[in-house]
Image (cartoon, rainbow, N blue to C red; front, top):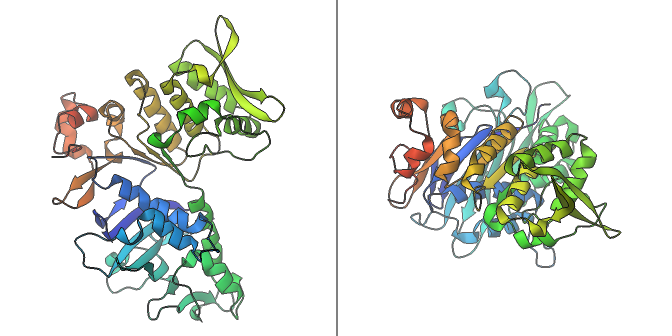
Length: 432
């Protein structure tokens, strides 16, 4: 089975974001727009799904993973301020390549979540389903194939499609005692194992495993949350697992060491990357500090003694973090980086843009930027730009760029960043 790929996101009644028309997601996605235009809310929808699957429930307080994820999303304040409470908030995620039929439409599956939001009390799962094929709004009278559908007729009840015997026509198997404070994707294994049929007879049994593996592998980074002091001074212990940089970056030496062990070419790749920003770089490597810890040494041509991260500039340390993430031989299934340009010299923007483009050839990447200097270097990727544009004074939607919209200006020599700088209405980015 091919690995699932996030294809689009839709929302309804969620904060200031109006995605009535699906926001298609490609391998490379550059998000631009004014502050407060919904970019962070867009990313929060993705984080929410991962948090539902990965947050540890607080059993002492009776808080489930779903409830913890809702709290991180905004609690009972996630409803559109113009919608009267209580109301239903919807988020739909489409994944392609969860089948292997050769038909992109039939290969896709849509996870549709409907949340009951009461601003005075709670948020719960009002309905959840996973179905194949196109978006329900595009199907008209045709019915998709539902892998499961929970709470749609009665809270706590639902049904899952099963084959009896395997390979024959499917039927719905009724399930009871489905919690409304947990996602079906989380509780499905337990529900299927407690049922009267073999879990392997439900197509969703394997699909669910692939989806969860994909979603839990998503990685999110925000340059504002990178802790430069911790990155410079942390000495993580040898032998710990970890191939992904933490959100603060404090495990950088460990990740460098583990990736060196994982792939023989990774150390050369990082060294070549650092030579692009500091040409006199001779070698950079994680080394043992004491008996059980790791640190990073940085050697330069003509200087016998190594430098350490405490000796390097903020921008240099940031670029090392981005290089480690983007040159990794084990890229996540989705990589999100918010404002990677923060604290970087403008001369490094083409280097960073090229790293991003190369990584996007191997996985899905979403970049959020306010930098026209970085945006200049995505002029050759116009159709990968998603503009968050104002519908009215309080709501924003996503408008993908197209070459036809900017063809005349690009032929005149304008770059995307130039258009962003002057507030061209096709690009947006300004708060007025």
